[in-house]
Structure formats: structure tokens, C-alpha cells
Image 1 (cartoon, one colour):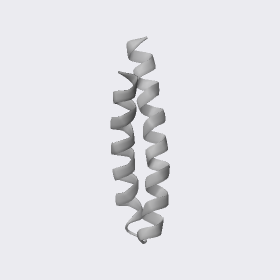
Image 2 (cartoon, helix red, strand yellow):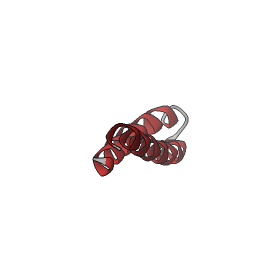
Image 3 (cartoon, helix red, strand yellow):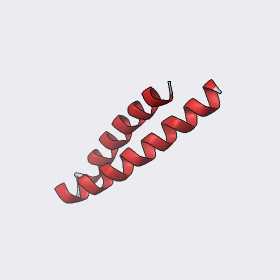
Amino acid sequence: MSKLLAFLGATVGGAIGWWLGARVGTMTAFIVSTVGTGLGVYAGRRIAASVFD
């Protein structure tokens, strides 16, 4: 379940990051999306650990 929530967090975090960064430019969207993906993976794993352990 941890991997599933990490994947969902990465998808949502990356999409939100791209949406926010695209207001400035494509390269900014890429960088902010990468950060959002990392934060999403972190959040997904934290949620999985707290709920399913």
C-alpha cells in the first residue's frame, strides 16, 4: 500500500507543481513539478506509514 500511495502522491504533487510553475514558464514548471513529485512521494509514504502500520 505504501508504493501505491507514494505513486498517487507523486502524480498529484507533480501535476500541482506543473500547474503552478507553468504560470512562469516551461523550465520553471519542470523544476516545480520535480519538487512537487518528491513532496508527494514523501507525503504518500508518511500517510501509508501512519495509517497501515
